[in-house]
Image 1: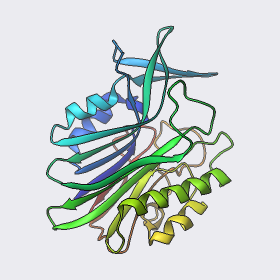
Image 2: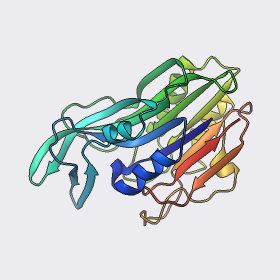
Image 3: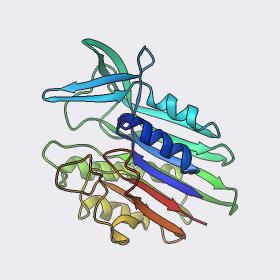
Length: 267
C-alpha cells in the first residue's frame, strides 16, 4: 500500500501537481488546502487578504477526481469564503480531500472539526477553523485493516509555537481517531500540522503509540523552494509500531507545492 500526504497549495503549481498525482500511483491520497467553487466559470481565481494575492484553482478537487478515476474522493470543507474573478467575489469552499483506491473497502470513517467550526459566510479571523478525516479500510493485499487520519493544523499568525488552541486541537484529533480506530491494529496519522518538532502535539499523539517518520528518519525540511520563510518543518507522518515501513520519503523533487509530499510504502 502507498500513502501520500500533501498540502496541495490549492493547485497553485497546477501542471506539476496534476502530473505528480497521476503518476505516483498511491492507494490513498491525503490532501490539504483543496479548493472547490461550484459557481466558477474560470479555471483560476484569486484569494485576497491585505498585502496578499494568491492564485488558486477554482475547482481543484474536481480536477484531481477526474485525474484519479480509480479512486473515490471525499471533500471536507472548513469554510466557504470569497475568491475573486477580477473584482467579482465568488463563494468558494476550502478544506481537506481524501482519495481512496476503489478496491480498498472503507469500513468506518469520521470527519469533524479539531479547531473552531464551519463558517459559511467568510474565512473568519486567524486562527481559522480546521478539520480532520479518519478512515478505517481493509488492505486487500495483506488482508489486514489500517486506520488513516489526516489533518491540516491551525495557522497562527504569531508562528508555529505551542498554544492552548494547538493543545486542544491535538486532543480533539486523538478523540476523533478513537471514534474510528479500535486500537491494537495499524494506525497512520499525517498532514500539515503547522507545528515544530518539539510541539506538545507529538506527546499527545504519542498516547496512541505513534512515532513520527519525518524527524525519526532524519529529515530536516518539509518545504520546497517556493517557501522562503524560516522554520522548515510543517508536515509529518506518524505510525504505530505495528506499521512496517517498506520505504518513506519527504519528496524533494518534483516540487508540486510550497510543501513537499510525504510518501510511505507499507507491505
